[in-house]
Amino acid sequence: MLIHTFRESVPPKRVAILGVSGVIGRGLTGHLKELGVLVVPVGSRDIDLLSDDAPKRLASVLLPDDAVVVLAGIPLRLGRDEATMAKNVRMGVHICRALAHRPVAHLVYMSSDAVYPRSVEDVSESSPTGPSDPYSAMHLERERLFLELAHCPVAVLRSTQICSPYDTHDAYGPNRFIRTARQEGRIVLFGKGEETRDHIMVEDVVAVIHGCLAHRSRGVLNVATGRSLSFAEVARLVTGQFDPRPEIEHAPRRLPVTHRRFDVSAARRAFPGLSFTTLEEGVARMMRQPIAVKGW
Image (cartoon, rainbow, N blue to C red):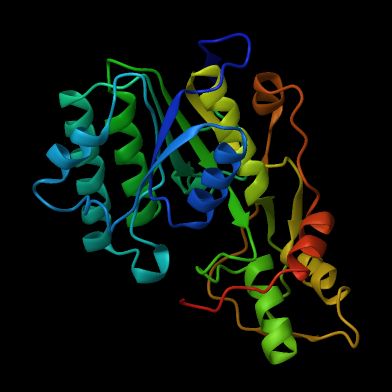
């Protein structure tokens, strides 16, 4: 459940974004700058959050009235094993040490719906969490670290899969389907593509983060649209954007069929004016942009 410190929207004075070079970081930076908010971008070239001096260096750039948005982490395409998990947790520990030395006004952590076990198909903020793999275990540990910060309100946002033409993770779903349809003239589904998932556009994720910043929110919120489609439906939606239509092919299934549906009533209560982009609108918008190269 998300609780607002400010009933009315109050723009943050300054926002430090850790992990500024990713899809969300770039989108959030541009959005806040358009609103006249001062942004302090912190990328890996600025501060290596794995280094021993990271807490001291990060603390040196923060001010007491800052809001901090934590997006930093090692991308999934570079590993989701235990070693990668340990590095991402180390980043979280270093951020917490920096904030212990230099307290700030607010923190927003971008987590993942992976913290809910695969067996949980109908998800709300009250659904039980549990690690399914090192990646989900990492997010759960980082959530715990940040939520235990006593000096400032902390908002944890658990996002479903994010759609963006600039995504480089090549995750199974709209991003990959558009790329392979363009480059290979085909889309490959696992099995019949019957699994259902919720997909959200990066612009909508940025809007939720901004809402949390403006209300200095604390607590946990799932970031999803509330509408789940099967991967087969998503593939047909993508192929409908092409003439001639790419082929839809099928490959052996790697994992058992699972579904995921979100109850987004908490998000609608928290942000009554928020509307989510439909996947049809989102895919059409993505088609007007170049898709990022796999592994770029």
